[in-house]
Image 1 (cartoon, rainbow, N blue to C red):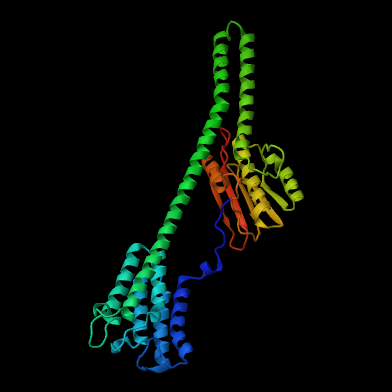
Image 2: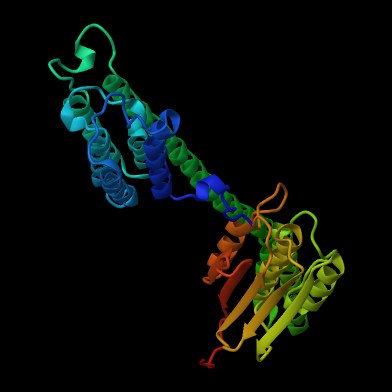
Length: 400
């Protein structure tokens, strides 16, 4: 069963932390490299010392905290903190691109994660700020317009563009992957429906044709030759039973995966204890709990419930790295059947390995065809949970 695996360590670090770390690196690097004799750019005037730097850092950290909620304001605060920390208001020298490391990181993350409108607004703000403020040199125009060399502020603007383009590329790749994933899931559901339709047609069409012919014959001769009508009704009964058995076998074949725990064809929840014993012998102890009053179930519900449990238990054996799992079958209410499989495994998730069948998409579709409810996902306290609620039609004249 596919599920979202645990992301790598670096991807679990929130964007706010990356921006704050970038600010710390930009603020500490010149002092470490030059023994505290240089500020964030060459030739900056001394301003307020450590207290001034701490104030700028507080503003920068506030900007980092807002990088996802208010991206444009976040970039504005980071630009302001950098401008103040580098004495940008003196307009005597151009600012080193290294001083804007936090701004580059914020632009990259905003463009990769936030809506396009926010990313464009953040980049436009950074570009305008760099051109009109950070790039100004005393007694001159913006460095790129001098015709002599590319200034440091011009390099900073170029790096901001690179950060924005890199974030845009990451976002496009992610959106493309999500589109492909959605398409694959939709195709899996469609393929499952077509497979069920084909199998049902092949299984039922011939038998139902025989049933119709025998019923017509019985109706015509029931008054004149009742023994012949009785024979036709017996053939109808036999054909019906044979068709029902074929449907059950077809449903099992549709959902059967490679490497099943059980070597026998399951008939329904009556085989649950046998499944638990086979799985325990394979190395994972299965505890079965039944609540409510047991009773007969429609064949399609009985088989679907068993298949949900069987595939869930199989994936516990394959992927969960768990020593045991719990299977719960709840018949507390006559109008519904609830099944649940939980484990406390620490594996990388119930991933869909090659040959593992349709997984969650197929089970979810099967439950939907029965008008039920299906849930699957990691548990908050560790492990995995699969649960389904299948409505059970009540006999005529019986109310819940």
